[in-house]
Length: 215
Figure 1 (cartoon, rainbow, N blue to C red):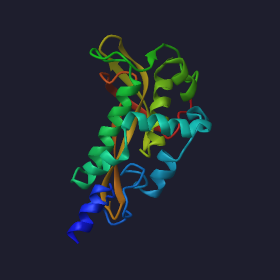
Figure 2: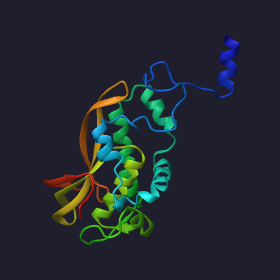
Figure 3: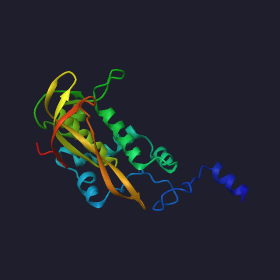
């Protein structure tokens, strides 16, 4: 038996740890630990909801880009089976996507550059190709990437204070963190604000949230 175990490990065959969630198969899935864990209504409305502004014809491209940002699912499963709560993993993943989209970073300038105009002009895919957009189009890109990776996300319309610009109407996002996970399904969702246009912004007053942006 010891020799058999040695051969299995040497050949690279692995299985989930004994404390893995009971709904998983013997092999580590090729999807992230949070995929499919939200309540059914949340999955329909905030995960598998591909508005034209998200360019669903590019869904496979979005999945590839999201995987480049987040990395191999195996590392996330290792954290999960080691005891990291699922809501913490989703938060970390969403922050990685927010960082990738946002142009504001003093150390490592990157992301989609900001341009001022009203409402949606390009949609997610063209904004990504152009490398520039306003808050609505920044939000479209983050929503597309989160939904492509199985993360619940919605749009947030608010009055916002910016460090350098003052106060104005703004669109950012809210990410759904799965809570009270039982047998692979979350019983609750906690919504947290993120801003792919400028993570340093502060909400003054919430106006509305939307599964898809109507303007």
